[in-house]
Image (cartoon, protein in one colour):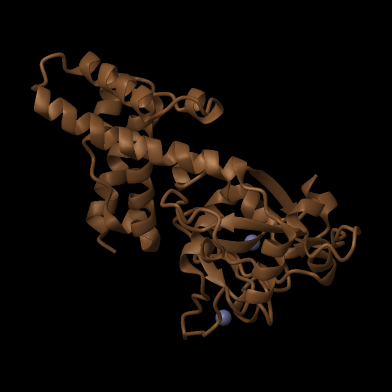
Length: 312
Ligand SMILES: [Zn+2]
Ligand SMILES: [Zn+2]
């Protein structure tokens, strides 16, 4: 660790504490570069997701996509006209060829996202599609994001062999609690952006557990959710612990998709369920401190499962 960089950085951050609502203090924070030690082993994820969040906010500042998602009679030219007006609002004197170029590029990007959401909304998964996906994932179908192994009850319900829903277990993982029936169910997720025609084709579909699918929904960046943890839990063995934002865990679990045990481990989401544990045991689970592990290398193996009532 470069101690001096870290101390200098936190010197500025600390003095800004009282005045974080003053614009001069915020300006000085804005000029500060975050040392790589502060970003930690997940620097790549933190920086990539910040880039995504900034890009999305910029595009959304040009045009609100809600009307386009809801009203399918609206087409790309309507969108392009709005983007053009919004850009002219910012830069009235932009040369015509540059304006055309930027309007076309940005409209196409926004349009892809709108199309993708429209297709997702229209998608109705038929039983043959479900069967095909299930059998393609044999012998041991798991959630492709977290590695959770589906229960026989969830399988039978998914395959239409039974109308009995899976039941929630008596103990749950406090970091990713499956508290509702839907969390145990099998759902179908689109892996790749579904804009290039191949939208609902099998190659683009994966089985996901309901918990991951709900958390993933339309989020793409850790900054799409709050940067604060959810709340505190009084854990029977660990004492007071912070409950992290579900999206932080899903993002790290699904991107690493393998056990990060320091001496090496072959477990991946294809063969094992992956769990979130802290790198630094005294720290809370946040995007800097989440370690992915299999059940064999889980430092919280004996502590992870708790009664759901403790989370209430
Ligand atoms: Zn999952
Ligand atoms: Zn392992």
